[in-house]
Image (cartoon, rainbow, N blue to C red; front, side, top):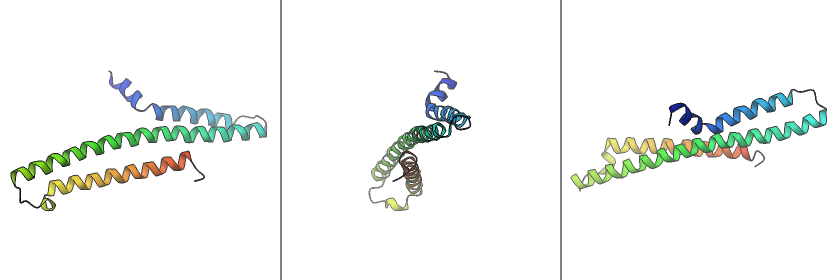
Length: 125
């Protein structure tokens, strides 16, 4: 699969969001009747938030995969250290501490994106 196609497939939510945003902005700026414009504006706002939620979902999915890979690396490191030095204190292993620090950063990004997605999809809650 070509790189351009792969990029487009992975960022389809972002592409869709951009297209819907452009169309909804044109609709809002049109010279239709006030009541119709208000209705279209309300619908376009919901569509924008939904498509924004899609792109955030893709981002969250990628972060979760990255987190799972990191957890596997942590597990391999723990097994490697324990098999070589059974009495070794794991808290003094710098590489392991770095992996745990990265895991915390990824988890914080996941939590932030989940919160942002919830705000976009359910603005009143």
